[in-house]
Image (cartoon, rainbow, N blue to C red; front, side):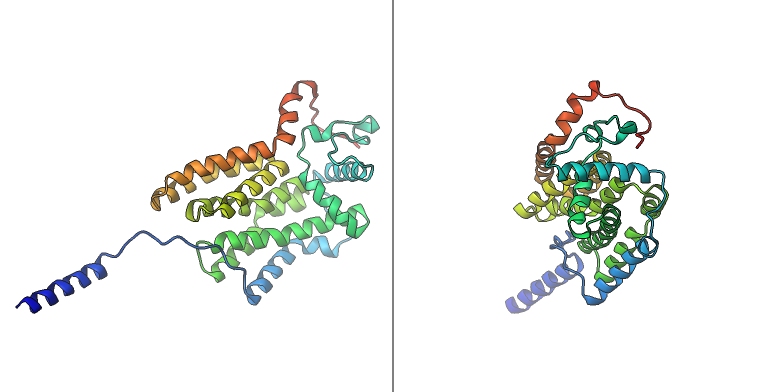
Length: 283
């Protein structure tokens, strides 16, 4: 009788475990790199997004094209003269000069300066910076999606992200280099923000600080919108996984990012009263 009762209790326990499993989803690990077919699909999608830029000679004649070229030329020339944190462009405002990088974030133009070391020519440096940004955007969107879904779905997410209408408008309608690179960096911020909650490792915290600092130095408005949009997502994930302390870690990472970006943000805040803002900056 005792043996029968024990078997009955064991059967009930087994049924309870089968009927009412733990509904808390296990934390997802760090994303894996795409397989060879996935890499090929991402390469095709990113190449399609910049194909007109690759096959045509001139850069797109967007509303921000002249400004992008002027800022890039002035920045690269200043770097060549040994000024490693340029703030002034001599050729702006009909050669009277302007403190362009007191207002406009500089990090995107550092990328142009690095690429020009290989191309040797400014137009080609801008072109290949945009091409590399498309490749990177596709890959980063894949990695961000890979933390929550399968590889095929992540490939689709990466392809759709690089072909978003907003990116196409920034590339061919406006040709705003800063906004293009800001959109490129955005998935990496989302990836590390999620991993701070899910994983909480020093690697996740450091990645969030670095990626958010870079986002601020590329385009502060995009960084602000990204942070605000991430709040409900991060909050819901922390509550779902029962990790409210991760929200404090997230706030600490955001504060550290602001401190790291202080070299750009502090002069921007302190010198606003001395700057005269005009609707256009002419070459």
